[in-house]
Length: 491
Ligand code: NAD
Image (cartoon, rainbow, N blue to C red):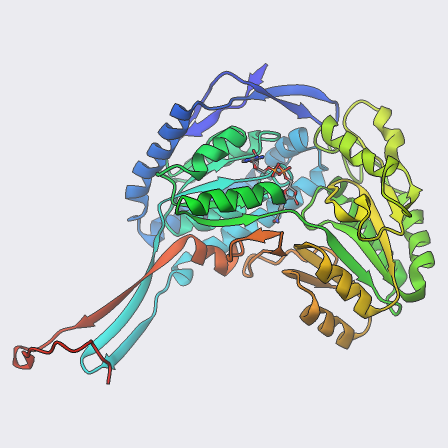
């Protein structure tokens, strides 16, 4: 049985495999992932620290060259990387390539590091005094990532962390760990010095050691809300800079004036794509006014046309969910969705196939207080909530504890503008159901979808992975010699 290696100090390091990694399309165990001892965790952090001592002083042009070469390699190896993702995650090859493309954007953004790291200069802030600022790296960044985007989320973190001069220890999800090792190999081939980017396989215990490790300076986490909260509280208690992105329950509001065909298409694409295992998936469609019956009918008609199958079959619209355990959890929302919820489409019949498949499920009349509405299901289960007015829709979103993404479908520009201003959510789409910002903006939710203030990637990513120094300079002439015990003043 194949064992997924660590990647430490520029080379793969094998260790006895422990946790199973499945092919979710067949249900078979395809490899095992090691759980590092505390000694190995210490060794990786020490390696990264030693490498940082040199990398932090690398020239900006050296870093840019590495990132440009890495970008080229990601493009060249897209097919291979996509196949690796599909084999362990289960998403379709097309979707895996989409994920690589969105990760690539972050590398391209980081290639502009000479611009991003420009400081400021103010001449003559006081007589003969100038001030300039610049930014420096933090040290060792622990990057802890979820299963659902095994290459994009590591790139959200690594591209800017490396560009700003940090060393990285990536702890990928133990469920689909292989592509992270390939990522590390490509970075090495692109010229990144050994030890600057390391992959440490492992589970919660590995994460917990990193959160309190004295050799770790900052933690970037993406995963579920309970773990994000734990990571934020623990790592900040240990004095680290932390951004911890959590789970989601994303609402898509459809106003009565919307084109219902376009809205139904969007609900299908954003609700069932990647088997609903996206943090920006739409999980609740909020039908406003009297359109609900027509909208549910249009969505149901599209659900019936979906093909669910292995991710490497071009005919599949979406693939399996990540594990059998997760499949059982998802199916429990059909048998027990909560009082008053109507099951319009039940996808549980696919559960008899080998692999971890769940057919598309559609629920109507989901309301706050029902399991189907309150929980992040993270599967191909779309709920429809019915409200009377625009204000009711906004109130529902604002009372929800999550605030990652939301969307509105309408032809009314003013309603869309009011919506953008009134919702307590970080990322908003207007007739766009999955509003993941492009890499020159930053990505982040509000409320229980983000712990810490910094959004990830883009300008906030550069800021998160670096810290400012401000230098005040004076070159006095000998003739200006004087004793003055007063507080330094500019006027
Ligand atoms: P998860 O929280 O189970 O795991 C994420 C990482 O944390 C993994 O590396 C895992 O090994 C580690 N981990 C798990 N339990 C831990 C614990 N108790 N203590 C310390 N570390 C622990 O998440 P997942 O199931 O891999 O990913 C799906 C979740 O991630 C969903 O909730 C989804 O919404 C969320 N997500 C959020 C975003 C975002 O940008 N907000 C993006 C992608 C995924």
